Length: 69
Image (cartoon, rainbow, N blue to C red; front, side, top):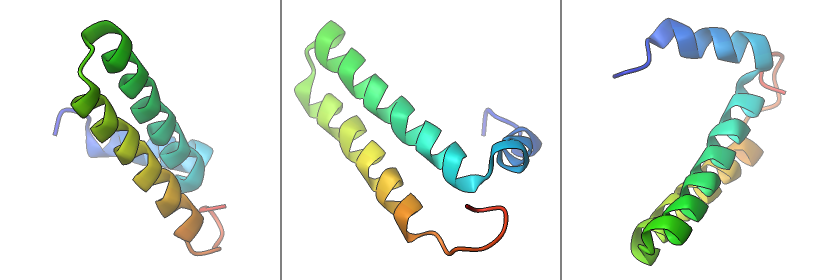
């Protein structure tokens, strides 16, 4: 793993799990757009878009407990 575990944990502690996952979803969507426009690879673009949608759906399924939001 290229990002140390403690770095991700600090992000979650600072922003909360839901917000970090929403950021990941937004990054996936941005990557999808970039791939579509700059590389014209619609298959790969769809995969990134789907990944973002799956992450966003997971956020809606998170339990409502303190620190998750």
